[in-house]
Image (cartoon, rainbow, N blue to C red; front, side, top):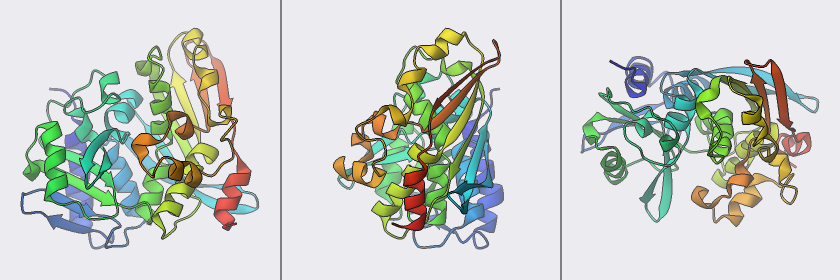
Length: 321
């Protein structure tokens, strides 16, 4: 019997979230089709602990979020630190918001381990792992309205599961859970960009850890979207521990970081997102590139740092000017 990302994530939901929903400032809702929706920031406040559990479950129980801090200018700001085992499976098969469902006139992105049950998108195609042992399906939606029967059934149709076996966690960007879970996607972001290089050996990443600042929590969804993604493209730093040949890294490393995009480097993500019609599916991959990634090759003991932080953008976001 193999390991199940969904069963591990469901254990987090059933043992840590549902019994403690009130303490976590969350609400558990049972839909008429049997699906369980967990509101973590739409009509409730959520919080730091809820954000951690949202993120941990989104990694299928194979990753953990902890909080630290960093200086932006003279100001100490909180950071997320995400550390994962089996990084290729955890990120490409679970964490990436790679499943797009046409819903209410838009492409609604869905992340979480339910993407590993069947092949739902080209990111999950990059890994061989399929969760054949899943008893529950666990998904996560960055959304401003509560998921309903239509959305949950669309998701379940894609993964061939019954809505009664679905846990769907939901939060907008403009809340603590939304802000934290997005900036904790630094490894996801790096994997998504390297995943475009089909010759990149994703299974050669043996461990990974990433750091990102939580710059601000903003009530306006579009402004919030811009600021948290600025934290990713201008403020994150990740470390990938690789077991491969140096040439496997050198083939793509220079084309990876956000700073290579000289025409948009330093432009707030809010502006870039509006240019894409506020639709994630239309955001050019290069505009969502990782900020700084350090590749450590454990086979050769060689170190390949790429990218740079942009403290000017971060300080502007944090100070609000």
